Image (cartoon, rainbow, N blue to C red; front, top):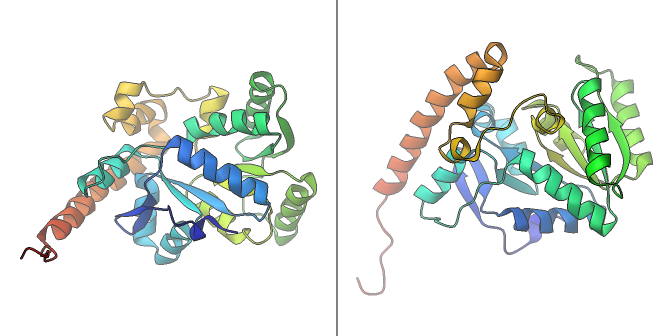
Length: 265
């Protein structure tokens, strides 16, 4: 079973990505269903960075679009959906989705795991999750080394995940590494995998959450840039202007297409 087979899936093009029209409730319902099936699968939580990476790498674009869900994490992606006539488009942020899913997993007896981040950050994540969700099963968490893993190390990680019988695996390896890891291991891991990017650092309290009004204005990137200028400056300097230009070009093309004739024409 894959979510691709569901007839209620609605997707809207944002540059080369096919981004799902999806609410938090929709995403949670579909992820829980996939987790219960135990047949694996993965969810891409897409933002401007993901969209530009996909634009520059057709292979990466394909593996993101092959995900069982492509969620609009970034406000600009939601704007693009709305500007193409989908007024019901909603943002589904990875850092917000993760604790929501943990709450539902606790209530439904599903286990979760965490892959990524530095060891001290991951420990903070696990401690907080255990405190907030005392009945939540967390049979797996692992912080991989910040270097290229050997084939033996890769196999050992997958084996540990499988042996833990984890059902929902949050993957915080950063873009594009986490998306590639999930796609590569789709057939090897029975858990549904969700690439949540910086959600681990946010949940651990190492990065401050942007106030709601800043997120709604699409300025969360600026809030994060102030906190991590050395790491994020070059990314935002290059990525954001390109996204604006490419998105505007897409909208111009969409609106310049001749309208389909109606029966009244």
